[in-house]
Each structure stands twice: as C-alpha cells, then as structure tokens.
Length: 377
Ligand code: FAD
Image 1 (tube, rainbow, N blue to C red):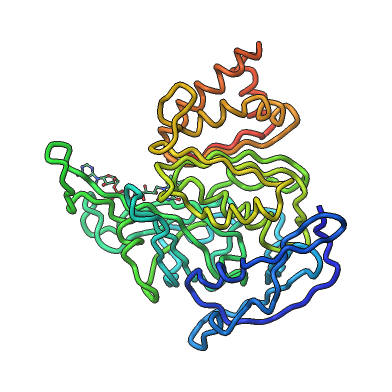
Image 2 (cartoon, rainbow, N blue to C red):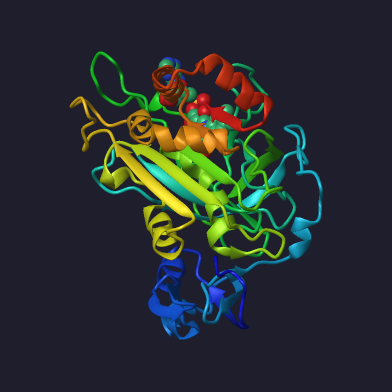
C-alpha cells in the first residue's frame, strides 16, 4: 500500500450540498508510481462548476501527489476519545438538527425508494462509524395520545467527519416504508411508515429531532489496521459499511492507515437498486488489493441452482476464502433486514459441515473472539 503521502497540496473549495462535487472530484487520471498504476485526482479538476457561492460548507481537500488521493478531515480531535460517544442526547432531550439534503439514490426500476439524507448536527451529536442515530418524527404517538412518537433508529452512513469532512454532519440511508393492502395490492397511505416517510419527504432547512448516538456492536475495530473485514449487507444495511469504507479509502486519517482487506457483499433487487455503487466501484479501481465488492441482484441474476441470487449465494461461492479469512481472525458484519439472517446462517452451517467443521462451535468461537457483528432490523 502506497499510502504514505509524498507531499500534500491543499485547496479550499466551497462545497455544494448535492453529490455532484463528489462525482466530479472522482474524475481520475492514471499515473505511475513505484511501478504500480495508481489513480489520482488533480486539484485542477475542481472546476468552477463545483464552486457555488451560496454553498454552506467549506472543505479542505488534500491531494497526495504521486500517491492515491485522500481527503483531509477535521477536526482531528474526533480521533481523541478512547470510547465512542454514547447516548449524548436521550429521547426526552433530543438534539434539534437541520436537514441539509435529501436525495433519492435508486433508479426508476428499483422497487421502492431509498434516500440519502444529510443532517447538520453542528458538531453536537458526534458519533463513530457503525453507530446509529435515533429520530423522533414530528407529531403525536397514536398509541400514547399527547406523547411524541417513539424513536426510530437509523444506521449512520457517513464517517464521523460526515460527507463534508468537517465533523458537522451525519448521513442516513433510509428506505421509505410503504404499506400495500394485501387484498387490493393498493397503497394505503394511512399505514405508511411514519418516520421513513417524514425523512424522505423532508426538505433542506427542515428541523429534525435526533437522539443518540447508539450502538457498539458495529463499531469498526481499528486495533489492527491490516485486519480483514467481511461486510454482508442487504439494502439499507449497507449504511454502516459506507462509513467504514470512506474511512478506509476516502479520508486521510493519520491514526488509521488501512492496509488490510475490506470485502463487501451487497444484496439488492436489481441494478437500479444498488446503493453507493459509484463510490464502491471507485475504491475497486484505486485499491484493488484492499477492496473486494460482490453484488447479488436477486431479480436479475441467477444462482448456481437457477434460483434468485441472494447474498448467501455469493457467500457460498466464496466460502473457502471466507472461512480461511475467518480462521485468520477476520471480522464479519451483517446488516440489513432481519430476514437475511436465517438463509445466511443455513448457508454458513452447510459450508462448515462440508468442510468437516461444526458451525455451532465455529460461531461460538467467532462470538467469543468478537469477530461476529450483527445488526439486523
Ligand atoms: P412505522 O410507522 O414504525 O411502521 C412500521 C411498519 O409498519 C411500516 O412498514 C408501515 O408501513 C407498517 N404499518 C404502519 N401501520 C400499519 C398498520 N396499521 N397495519 C400494518 N402495517 C402497518 N431503516 C432504514 O431505512 N435505514 C437504516 O439504516 C436503518 N437502520 C436501522 C438500525 C437499527 C439498529 C434498527 C433497529 C432499525 C433500523 N432501520 C433502518 C429501521 C427503522 O428504524 C424503522 O423501523 C423504519 O424506517 C420504519 O419506520 P417508520 O416509522 O417509517 O415505520
């Protein structure tokens, strides 16, 4: 890994709240360095198109010359605490944050809608990668008249520095919960999900009550920067992994120079439903030795038996490598809908048995070693 910066050039650019900046920053040139072909971004690529005076955020972007580009983040004090922040804002005293942007991130052929939502917390609700925010939607709790709605949890999809690298925002990846009447097949708006619809319908400047951050199970262990991390996601379950991967491959964090292996398995319905695919594909180009990315598209691909392709089919395809990595101490993470786990567990059990191993013993060992991380909802 040639992550050592040869020299750094910093430039300051106002940043637009949509993702066009990120897309244009990712414009690449191939250069050769230490006999390897790396991909670099020229600061000159930051064109006037990206520099709009009305923008609220200012980002310092460092470009490591003759090396892979990474973005400088601040404030680096966010690296100081030894323990993650936990429940700084409780449901009785939530923090009133502000919506920065809401962007639909799936194509027209995706079943359902998923949005990427950036929230400005002004640095008041710091978090670590893998944690969740609670959101209290506005209005009255139908089950407790006069009381606010219950908190809904959402995995944070950004790093602690946020999408603007300044430690002031958190991003969520939210799927709109729509209710279809099982008899008529028609949507019944009175039964649509309260919080997901509030979030996906919100507009820049809207206020939002957040609690947290919460959760420790999905924190990214950073004691060994050369470790292997196997990430299994279905749909919005990709959120925490987007955070991990930005920390590993997009940000320049002096205390964490990732040199291990990150392997993402993402299961969605079809190509239009892929989430953050452009970002992940870019890491594949830039860090082919450190990143692997496998997609299971249930409605487009077939598994070996001719059925729909689910993440467990991809796991089975690479089971030898996965088991070897686990035996070598790799962390494995699962995030997404609860329904994903039985199929995955069955596959892992079957594979273990084919290898002459007891899955129960292996699983208990993985849990004991803190290699096994599950957050399903
Ligand atoms: P609710 O209003 O709570 O309704 C729940 C469901 O019931 C909906 O599908 C709704 O359509 C249906 N419903 C409502 N009324 C009726 C009725 N009368 N009869 C039958 N059905 C009805 N979600 C994400 O999108 N992204 C994430 O990253 C994410 N991370 C999570 C992390 C954790 C740790 C947990 C626990 C959950 C996470 N969730 C995530 C799920 C999220 O917390 C919410 O559960 C989800 O958004 C639905 O909440 P809602 O308020 O929209 O729906």
